[in-house]
Length: 194
Image (cartoon, rainbow, N blue to C red; front, side, top):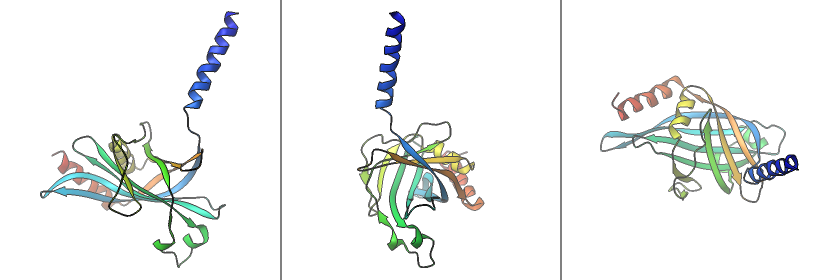
């Protein structure tokens, strides 16, 4: 009898844990990063990267594109800014591709995660950016993501689309030039007076 009660209890705990979990499909992605520095009163106030990428799935008619930034400030909080779009696979690979070909996609939630860290998540509400189609939120853990990008480690971007129970995770290593890497490192030295 006790054995059966333990099995039932384990089943109930597992069912509860799974009911709070979100399913994601993983897709490899090609990411790029460029240095981004914020200034206030002539001094560095935050360091980060503009991050962009697209999924590497050649077996579909359209491709999901991520464009945004990850910023870290001296206060320990950071900023995640993002926009997700879709583009026809043929247009993306053509010489005539332009940013006008991107169709914005409604996103319920977006997070960025580095190896061995917790994903970013809004400290407060998500806000619309001054840049049309972009959203932003304050978050912890942006320093972990930024460090992983600078070290050439894999990152993940999780996307929860409206109207879809299954999300998507884009994963890959962000290509950042040595010059941009050095600019971000110099920014961090100035930010923390190292």
